[in-house]
Length: 485
Image 1 (tube, rainbow, N blue to C red):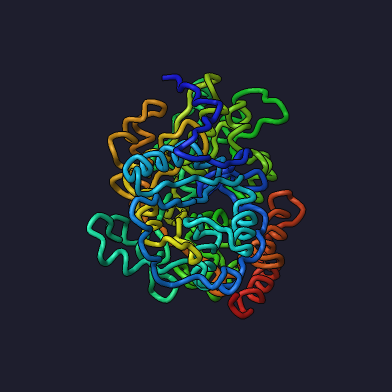
Image 2 (cartoon, one colour):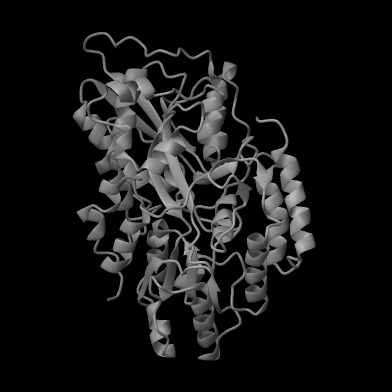
């Protein structure tokens, strides 16, 4: 079947008030996101400014504000990524306002994904932040806002609420939400085990007489297929058999795990020891280097756009939430699909538990009302709406009843086998890791060290010898040994 083109234009909706948003194409979810490598979709954004201290948050009260006077509508503001969440998020705000008409009125204020934290933290510092803000765990914002008392611990709300329970989310997500003092400081608005999928051009493989990937495929089989694709025709210079994920901390963790290693120790939770000089990490780096050098792998900047232009046969280690971007890029050029990524040498596929949360801001003057909005934005229906958007990130709410809902499994835009693989993703075992001192995105921190060394490998400027990887590891360890932010 040929896949149709997703809506190219985003709708602007006025919901009982203004919806403020800025343009800009996001990269993925987490990430969803963007691309891996410099051109990313769920990839890391530029290092955001440091979050303000608790004092800067305007000495926010720690208890919920008193109810509004009878008849007065409580106004709430929520922040998210305008280019990733706009369609589904706007629909969720609209549903909330309809449910609580005459009582609460929410307004969606979105920011371009690459500017989210700079904009959000500027409002925090100025005392004008909204009631609900966005916080990626993978970019350490969930943890940072909790530690700096900028987010409200919601355990008391969860304990007394009859509609929303922490058990609505998988156990791994529950554990990840309790990484700061064992308390819960937000709920997942999206989530995935990231960097776990392979997209392929079905028409290209069929023409070359190459069998399509299956869930039992290995990385070795993918490389053999890539070689056959390369030999099957006289390709233009800009064609490469495989695109891949590169560039961010998440992607690095996923890639090392494909070779049964870890970037940090412990591999789940706050990491304190760098592991990039381990045998699996060196093996991973050399594998990528060798395949890039052999021109089986593309430049690290290749992404959904190049795949859609027929410049790639395979696009692996990617996000299922990118399926919208891939569909828009490919249009009706060719038939394509996606499935779980191939297994590494030990059978491990890689991946990274990536959860995007929303938190009640500590400066909110209407915390009880904000709790109702938080519940609405992280509900089953809200998670489904995000996954069914015509554009932006299609990463669902991280709930089993969302991932495996009839609406997603029967999304007519995508093959059912692909959406079943997406459903199964929520049960993938990979966990969540991060620098224990939270030094990831600050200037000179872990992400900058990763960029310095790993990008030179992908650009063939440096060979990943054991000595080279040891040097990288030593620089990472220096950062990890610094005090917590």
